[in-house]
Structure formats: structure tokens, C-alpha cells
Amino acid sequence: MNDMLPYIFGAITLAGVIYFAFAILFGGDHGLGDALNLDAIGLGDADGGFGCMIIAAFMSVFGVIGLLGTLSGWNLLMTLVAAAAIGVMMGRLVKAFLRLIMAQQTASISPEDLIGMVARVTIDTPAGKTGEAIMDSAHVTKFPVRETSGAALKRGDQVEVVDTNNGILYVKRKHT
Image (cartoon, rainbow, N blue to C red; front, top):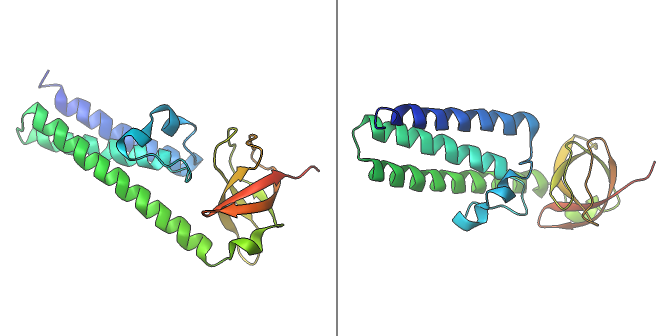
């Protein structure tokens, strides 16, 4: 079994990196953050939609630390504890960094100014989840959005902003 550990940790690292690429290319967490109950370990982000990035950061760091510990001759328990602890810390750092980025992107526009504006949904969003929409103005700006009735949003839907709260735009689908 010990001969397999570098391959196992290497596979976890690779899976984390691939998952990160998936998150960059396709956005959203596709319900995986809820399925894994990230709130239990302090990595949940019910209002931000960053689950995919947090999971990818944790997996990548867990795998790298596990691989380094295994190759350095640490015992398995010490390797797993160090990998898990540092993985959780990195997940929390990524979460904080993404929240900072979102705050800076929305800080230049007053939330009250957005009410009544129309945006276009950029990713399919399951019912009750936070998605993303683009608002075309002087420059294209992306915002986290959630449908007020909790309905699903489809990519390309035109939505109208009816309220804002904590950087999330609450929208209603416009009927065309």
C-alpha cells in the first residue's frame, strides 16, 4: 500500500488541477459544493457560488502535501493530518480571495443603481442557486444573480434586477 501512496496523492493533485480548469472554463459548482456539505468544515459558501474553486484548491493542496509527505518519509497519519489541515487553510484562503475580488468588482457601482437594469444570464443555474449574469454598460460587468422566486435560470435569459443584497442581484426573468 505504501508504494501506491505517491500515485494516489499524485492522482488527487491532478484531479484538483483538472477540476480547477473545469471551474475556470465552465463556472459554477454544479451542486457539488452542496453535495459535499462544505459548511461542515468551514469551506461552504452558500451565498457566493465559489464551491468549485474551493474544492479544487483543497484537492490540489491536499494532494501536493500528501505527495511531499509520502516522498519525505512521513508516516501516513502525519501526512494525512498535514495534508488535510493545509488543504482546508488553502480552501479558506481561496474563499476569502474570491470574496475580495467580488467585492472589488461590485464596489464601483452602487447596488441601488442596478435596480431596474437588464442583464443576460451567462451560465445555467439550478433552482435556488446563485448564478452569473453580465450587464452591458460602459464596460461589461459580471454579477452574481439569484432568481427571486427561486426558479432556475438558463444561459441567455434576459433578467431584470429587482433587489440587491450582499453583492448578489436578485432578478426576475423578462418575458420576451
